Structures are given as structure tokens and as C-alpha cells.
Image (cartoon, rainbow, N blue to C red; front, side):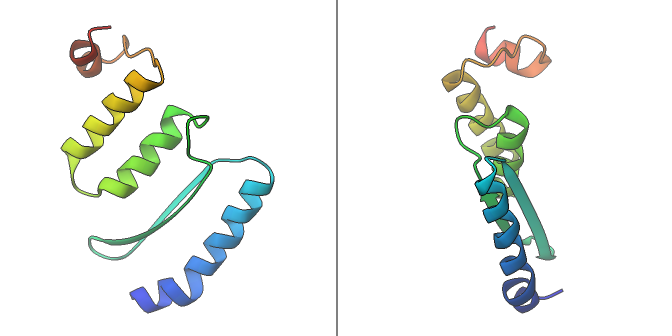
Length: 97
């Protein structure tokens, strides 16, 4: 698939879905990889009220192959949102919970 197909055909449809989600207060993350390492992402309502899973999806889409960036942003988000990370072998040690 090419970026042109994504831009002209897929992105507008994802925007329609995102707008529908917004009308109903739903969180949404959709990522399309049109070439290896090249992605387009549409997000809606992935803010402070979204679950950790939705935020994780959004951050994973934004950070791509930067695993450290993904983990660091999730640690920051967990701290800011008082998320219980005691069930995580990795985060419980980092966050001291």
C-alpha cells in the first residue's frame, strides 16, 4: 500500500469513525502501516479519562520502534494518574509501588 492510498482513501474514513466516536464519547486509536516503518494514526478522546490500555496504544503508535520512549511515557503517565503498578514486575520496581 502506498501513502497516497492511505491519505486519499483510508484516512478520511478513519476521520469519519473518529468523529462518530467523539459524538458518543468513545476513545479510539487506529494505526495503519502503509510501508514498513511508515504509519498514519488517527486518535480520538485518548486523554486523561482514557484507560491505560488506550493510552498505551496511542503512545505505542506515536513512539514506533522507540521502546524506551514507550516505557518512559507509560511510567510518567502512571505516576501522573496514580495508577497501581504493583502487579507489574518491571514498573513496581521503577515506581516503588
